[in-house]
Every structure is written in C-alpha cells, then in structure tokens.
Amino acid sequence: MDNMKIKSAAFHILIILFYSGIICLYSWESRLFPRNGNSYRSLPRGSFELPDFSWAGYHAGEDDIPAVKQVETVSASAGDSTAIIQQALQRAAGRGAVVLSSGIFFVSNELVIPARTVLRGQGPDHTRLIVNHSATKNKSVIIAGQIGSRLPLARSADFKGSRPFFIDTVKKDSDTISVYDPASLKAGDLILAASLVTDQLRAEYNISTHIENVLIWPELSSGFRFIRRITAVDKSSGVVTLDHPAGWTLKDRDNAYLVKFSSMLEEIGVEDLSIGFTTPSEHEIYHNIKNTEGEKSSFHHSRAVHFVNVINGWIKNVSTFSPDNNSFHLHSLGLVISDSKWITADNCDFGFPVHIGGRENGNIYVLEGAQNCLIRDCTARYGRHNVFFKAGAMGNVISGFKDINGMLKSESYHGLAARNLIENSMIYVQPDRALDFIGFTFQNRRKLSDGAGFTGADNVFWKVRLLHPESTIVSEQAGADKSRGYVIGCTSVWGRTDTWGTEWREGIGSENSLRPVSLYNAQLVNRMKIKTIFH
Image (cartoon, one colour):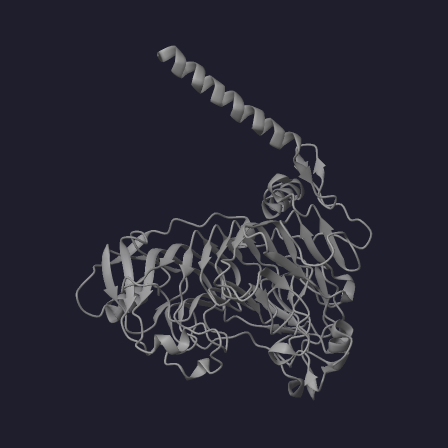
C-alpha cells in the first residue's frame, strides 16, 4: 500500500512538472518589453513605447511600508468611541501608532489622522468600526490628511497679471523645467506643475472644443498636472531639476505654470481593521442604478477612507463588512485618494455600497487626481464602478486586483487619466447584474458625462483576465502628443485585435503565459539597478 502511495505521488509530481514545463515553454514576452538575459527591457517599436510605471507606491516603491511603533492604545467600549480615538490620535501626532483593541468601536464623526501617525487595529476580523447612523453625506469614517485641503490649481482669471512661476513648455519624461523667475525656488521645494484647459488644448486632443454645443473638458476638471520635488535650481538659467521625470507635456500655449506649496501631509497609515455602515431605511430608493438624484440622499458621497493631500502614505489589511448581516457594507464610496502622491493600498477588500445611483455614488476605489499611487492585491465588490479614475489621475498602478461584479464598467472621466497601469488582474462580470459586459475602459465619451471627451492616454492593460466569455476591455485612447493605448496579454478587447492607429494590441487571448507577470515590478527592478550603478 505504501509503495502504491509513493508511486501515485511520484506520478502526480511528474504531471505537475510536465505541465509547468509546457507553461514555461509557451510563455511569451511583449515586443515592447522583451527578455534581456535574466531581466527585461523597454524596446520602442515605431511610435509605440511603454511608459515607466516604476515610480508608483509608497516612497516611489523604493521602501517597504514601515512597522511604526505603538504610542497610544484605545480599548473597545459600549458607547461612542469617536472622541476617545481622536484624542489618542492627537496625542500620538508625529510620534507613532494608535492601536485599537479587538472589539467593536462605534463612530459617529470623522476620525482625522495627523501627519506621521498611524491608526492600527488587530486585523479586519477583530477590530471593527461601525457607523450606526445615515447622516454621512460628504463625510468619511477615516480621513488621512486635511479636511477641505486641495491642490492649489489656478483658473484663467488668476493669470490676468504677472505670474511669479511662469514656465516654458515642458515635455513629458523631461527631468527639468525652465522657470522664468526662479529666484524664490530652492532644492527640496514641493511643487505642482500644471497647465490650463484652453480651447487649443481641447481641440488638440478632441478635434473640437464642443460636441453638439456641449463644452469638452470643462475647466479645472481636466487640466494636466503633476506633483514633484525640486532637487536643484540653476538661478542663472532658470532650469529646475525634478526628483523624477515630468508626467505629461505642459505647453506655454496653455499657460503652463508652477506653484510651490507645503500643505501635503506625510507618513500617514491605516492598518488592520474593518469598517461597516448600518443600512439606512431609504436604501431601496438609492440602491438603484437608474436613480439620477443621488445628491438628495443623506449619505450621498459618504466615504469609508479618504486620503487627501498626502504624500507617502498607506492603507493595508483593511476591509468592509455588514453590521446588519445583510448585503450592504458601505453607504456609498469605499477608498478615495484625492490629490495625493505615493500612496500604497495593500490587501484591502471594499464593496457592497447601498447608494449606486447617479452623481458618482457607489464607486469602490476612486483615484481623484491621484499621482503615482499603487493599489496592490486589493478587491472591489458590487460597486457602481469598482474602479473610477477622475480629475487627471496620473502614473498610478493597479496590480493583482480583483474587480468583482461591478454594475457598470471600471473607467475614467472628468479629466484625462494618463499613464496608468492595470496589470495581473481579474475582472468578473455577473451576467444577471451588469448593464453591459465591458470590464474596464478608457475611451472617448464625447459629450456624455458633462463633456468628458477622451478619458485616457498612454494607459496600459497588462495581463488582465476576464472571466465571463462575453466580457471585454475597451481601449480608445487619445493620440495627441504621441500618446497611445496599450492592451497586452488580455483575454479580450473590443474592436480590432491587431495593432492599428494609436492602439497597440498584442497577445489577446494569451494572458496566462505573458511574462513578466508584473510589468511594474520588472520596471522597478530595472530602475533600482540603474540607481545603484549611478549612486
């Protein structure tokens, strides 16, 4: 009998090795990122070249999320815990972590985490925050950052007079900016480089400024912008050197400008807990995809966690749950990252909103003007849009993601989302739930959604698996400024499957054997090798 077990085990091992060999034998690399010895390298082909995504994540992917020391503890109690948790956060500000015990914490107002401070539980199944009222409109359970703080964006009217930081045209991927008056700039300054939305910019990207009398890209929702830190200033020439290359082209024609600011908070973390909202009595009214008056709800734009104006932060091992043991976890939005840079979300699981009506409710992961953020090994469930890019989100990476049963496709609008990567991810669309079978899209929305126009450029789908046979990806990205759309090693793509125009298509239907599994990780390894050599 023992010999039979040994033979059976040996047989199964041989089968595994055999099929592993077949997978290795038939693995393939993109022509834009082929194998180079033991690693991979970028290789332009014609006008197509993959963007560099290696700058995403906490400290640009160069540092692990730290183990921050505990300095305050809060124990669960029967009453409202909001005040006692907030007091502990204030005492811990800048010093370390507030650790919540196992148990249930009732929260009636927003918890605001200061700079260099962490809120940590004992794990999602052990530390639970419950919001047991429905008056959550435009509020968050946890705010990492500053309430009401946003990036200093200009309007056309602001530039009637002189501009202290007027800049010359800067090309994407350039590591310098020419400033006309750099006298007050210095190394270490945090800056926002941006341009206005002019009619020339609208026409360049969308052919026309209006479609059927609808203005395309309403001002401020769509201007190109990126956050950088200055590493050197040549006062004589006006050349400013950036900590990493420019994210997009900013043209003098579009009143390109530079703003120095210091309002971003640093080193904020949320860890090891779960959040649940009790179900409002009017849930049936707003759990309706056709409801167009979402702002009338008492829980319109309610958020579980909101990062706003944060640089270098993280959220890990955080999930949602139902306090009422039903199918609702959230009132509306899940994780929202606004005007923040280098945020990592790791191993989070959000979903099941009550409000899935209009006015941008029910979206699970929202990247609103987010820059170089990393959503890694996370899950979104049953949202209106499970992933939602807006306000010019740029340089972000979604890796190892599970996009489950979104009512509508994951997508972008209210600004051109540029140079974002969706990789090594899975999308499942349930036939009796979704309104269509599009899993994820960057496309030209033309006059829809208040003149959304083109919603993406230089975004890459890499090794994305769609589990429903009718589900697909749609990539119809802007071609201005030599930008492109990329679908590589994915199950399906709408339209032609071969490379054409401004769209690169490769390996459609061969997602399982594409290597490397993570384009982001491979690019990060390459960049760190170069950094080591030159430092």
